[in-house]
Amino acid sequence: MNRINSVFLKLDSQFDMGEKKKLRDGLSAVLQIGQTLWLANDETLSLERLTFHGQTATDDFIYGEHQQFPLSQLLNLPVPPKSAQNFEEADIEGLAFDETESYLWLIGSHSLKRKQADPEKSEDENIARLSKVGSDGNRYLLARIPVVEQDGSLQLTRESVEPQRTAAQLRGEHSWSALTKALRHDEHLGDFFATPSKDNGFDIEGLAVAGKRLFIGLRGPVLRGWAIILEIEPQVDEHDSHTLTLAKIGEDCCPYLKHFVQLGGLGIRDLCVQGDDILILAGPTMDLDGPVTVSRWVNGAKTVGESLVFNENLEKLLDVPFSHASDHAEGMTLFSTTDGAEPSLLIVYDTPGVDRKRPDGSVEADIFEL
Image 1 (tube, rainbow, N blue to C red):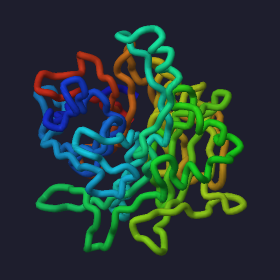
Image 2 (cartoon, one colour):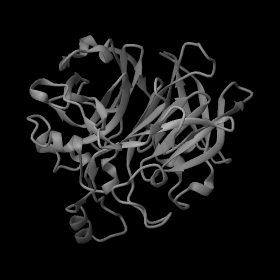
Image 3 (cartoon, rainbow, N blue to C red):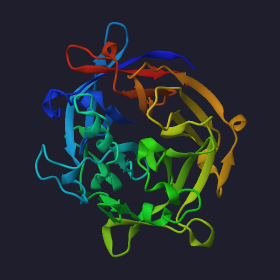
Image 4 (cartoon, rainbow, N blue to C red):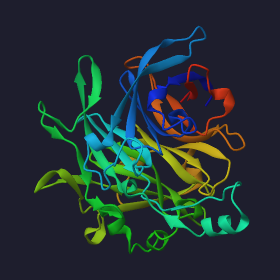
């Protein structure tokens, strides 16, 4: 699997969160729908849409015409924003597209966070900071939003008429969702909800859709070297079209299935479905640089019941490049600019290196051959 060329993502600086918090520096998820790319930054409360804008002289692709979609206008957020600058982030870590019903799915990390040490603060202050654990209430989002074509471009809408579709989200509040509630007493995962994400705590960082089922990748916990993928089937609440519940799909009416994947101690950073297969982007669960890999779980989307997948039953496709303190691969999507063409794989990076940033405000992502 070889790197083919690049995609330059031109994000409009008017949507940055400040001079030191630019959207391009914290990309956490990417999804291609037609001629558009949909992006998430894990410190915002919005989704970003870029449209194909041409190619460079070296055949790299350019996406621009940035439009931002605030989630507060599309969903009933657990913690609505007080202003454009004062909000609790959703920490969106996964995007997926249901082509059959034209829904964009998104998921937050559902995780706790620990404060970091600050070089400008005293030793005592930093020791105290490392004891502080908290959560942003909007992290507990799992939602679907209708995608519609309007005036020649793709838009997100709370409701569409033809066909009748509505934005909906999994039942929950500022400290839980129906998913975490169902998992609280799970024999493998229940003990990890009190642990912050970067400490090998519960942390969602991948989403893929296959028919009525969603596959959810966990960055953590990793159990004795085994990463975990959850499988669920959201359904619309019979009393409220804007609320989702979890269908009973497992034994003893359990609302989820678990799949254990041997990834050499790595956690899952993103997922995407290709045919009946599931592609897995994997990286460290702790606050470390690399290694980062992409593997294929053959027929993963057709698995019946729970499963345990040994390393030898995975097809390793790629070692993703990474740099010290930069170029952290966070999101991937199947990528094609021609209808019917064999797709390649587009990967975006959190904390991109200086060499990926351009003076026009764009940032470089990589395309790899599948």
